Every structure is written in C-alpha cells, then in structure tokens.
Length: 332
Ligand code: ACO
Image (cartoon, rainbow, N blue to C red):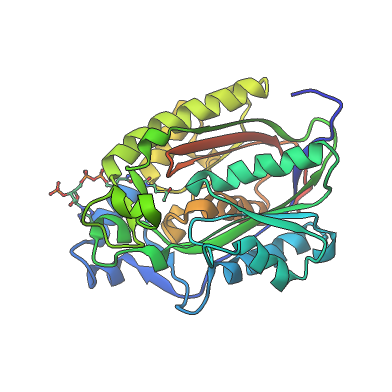
C-alpha cells in the first residue's frame, strides 16, 4: 500500500475494566463446571463484570479518557468516534453518541460499528481511510462490551467464556511507512446461526429454545472456523503489506480461547513470547479484547517504535479481520 496518501497509525491507547472480578471458583457455585475444565479448555481464570447500572458507554468513556491522554489529544480535537460493540447502551441512539456527550467531544461525528469480535479491527481500518484521505486528523476507536448483561447465567456452555471491559485507540497521521500497512476484512453470512445474541426479528428465531437477548453459540463450529479464519486472514494482510510471517514482532489476537491463539501463533511460526495474551485475566470481551490487549501491552512498554504489530480477530457474522501496522509511537 504505497501511495501519496497520509499514513495512519495509533497515537495513543487506553483500557478499562470494571472492578468486580468473577473467578472460575465463583462460577463453580453457579453452574455445573470446574476451574480445571475452564482453564484447560479456554485458558480463562477470571473475568471482570460490570455493575447492573453501569452501561457500556461508561466503560468506553473510561478507556477513551486514558487513550486521549496517552495521545495528548483533547476531546474537542477528536473528529470522529467509532464504537465497536455488540452490547451497546441502546438499539438507538448509538453508544458512540453517549460516549461523545460524556467526553465533551463536541466536534466529533459518532457512530457504532457492528462486526462482533472483529469490530475493533474493522473500525481501525475505517478510521485509517478517513485519515489517509486527509478528511480527519483524530479518530477515536473504542471496543467495548458488557456481555455479562447478555448471558444466560444458567448456560455453562457460554457463561464461563465472557467478560466486560473496554479498550480504545486514537488514530492519526504518522510518519511515512508507519501505521497500518495492510489489512483484510471478511464475512461469511452463512454462519449467522453459529454465534450471536438472540434479539431482533431474525436473531430471536435463529436458535430454538435460546433465552431471549442472550448469547447463542455452537462452540465447536466457531472453534473450527476461528482456527481457519485467523491463519488465512493474517496471511492475506501480510501479503498486502508486502511482508512475511518472519517480519512480525508482535501478534495481538482476539482473546476467545487460548487454544485458538496458540494455533494462530503456530500458523505464523511465532513463539508465544511474541503473542499478547491476557485472556486468563479478562476472558473473551468480544470487540474489546483486541484493544484491551493492545493497550495493556503498549502501557507495559512492550512495543518499540518500528515493530511490526499484527491485530487479528474473528467473531459473529461470521466475520474476520486483521491488519498489519508498523508501530509509530515512541513508548516509555
Ligand atoms: N464446564 C464443564 N463442562 C462444559 C462446560 C463447562 N463450562 N461447557 C461445556 N461443557 C461440556 C459440554 O456440555 C460437552 O459435554 P458432552 O461432551 O457431555 O456433551 C463438553 O463439555 C464439550 O467438550 P468439548 O467439545 O471438548 O469442548 P471444547 O474443547 O470444544 O471447548 C469451547 C468448548 C470452549 C466452547 C470451545 O469450543 C470454544 O472456545 N469455541 C469457540 C468459542 C468462541 O471463540 N466464541 C467466539 C465468541 S466471540 C463473538 O463474536 C461473540
């Protein structure tokens, strides 16, 4: 992707999780499960859960404040807010509008983007298009979920997997040759029945016997899809960036299952030390998983300027998305 356009990259990141922690041992008292099963099958030890009266926009706001501070950006300098979520504050208006109001980002346009767990990478590529054309200079991208409010807490197949939280990144112009160098987005709409939330005219009808407004999932089918999709999308993104797996310094994958992450790393022949993994502490936080992992790793100073960082995810739709970026920010 060489052109005369402006290169777009991450200027700052931040994340936030609610205080309350729900451990596997807590879950043992709620459903027929065990810490051993959950850890072995998923890699998850605990997850954070939002209070009943705390909506997605509140977690998103907290992450956004941190990302804006990290990017030395004032709320009124933000041109656009994109919020990736599947558990927003309302069907309408958008969660991005609630966030805009609380931030005082009075000059920003705002919309939500629905691509489930792929949402943050989808949103990042959208942000990059606006920056590349010179239309906008500061785009705030947030992934946020309060999935705990959309789970059937009697269904052990799903309730042990997810957590709540938010991650945010500020995108803006960066030095030539830095930022997003290649990406791949995709969807296979024949997989809508494999994973989703039973709401809306189609969603309610998709899975028989599913509690309304709760997550439905065919775990085995999603697992097989995820392993294939992660490998294929990263390969396409690398090709578009003119790179090979050996060029990758860091992989920031969607945190759905440690076994899916391990298989993605294997496909790039990347040692696990180069993979950002925080699923043990947070569980799967759909659209927020990747930005939370990105922000946590960046905050720990793990990325050096010039590092090649790959973001890759998959989710309901079924969707997938990946992007390759040359880290533009000088950390620590
Ligand atoms: N505790 C104990 N046993 C359980 C639990 C649990 N919490 N959940 C399921 N089981 C049982 C099932 O009932 C089943 O029992 P059975 O064989 O007697 O019927 C058995 O465990 C299933 O075992 P496996 O099929 O071997 O489980 P698997 O190794 O496939 O792990 C899992 C299941 C964790 C769900 C896995 O398939 C997975 O991670 N799938 C992908 C999930 C995913 O990525 N979702 C993305 C969501 S992102 C988004 O867009 C919302």
